[in-house]
Length: 174
Image 1 (tube, rainbow, N blue to C red):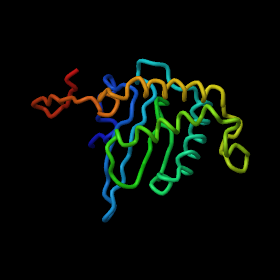
Image 2 (spheres, rainbow, N blue to C red):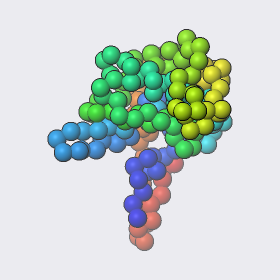
Image 3 (cartoon, one colour):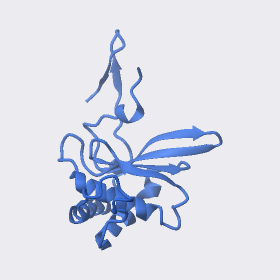
């Protein structure tokens, strides 16, 4: 069985950033999945679960209300490994084209006085939120993006070659 795209990236070399993960064609339309990575996998501690949940609510709300992007947003949600989020958009844009949007979204968290959609009628586990920690992570990531805006490594997955044995087993080069 083939590995799915996100499992084929060498996670030992990913840094925080905004990466194009995959592009899918749906008839005449393209849909692109982006990896918005806040933490280095297997190196940094993962994002606190309650803060991750709050960031999901806050940033999904921001993205779906942004006048220039709201009609393009299909999905914003956490990665199972708790190191970042997936953003799925209509169309096919380079990761760098999302820089300002993602930066604004994470900066907007600091102004929040409450997490939207946290009533029991709106949320599957409304007691699992932490606005103050969400602000901390959002500020950390926004500062990182600003400090690394000119660094291509935060917009392009690390390039790796796979060595293939005579038996067909694949190995990373790192």
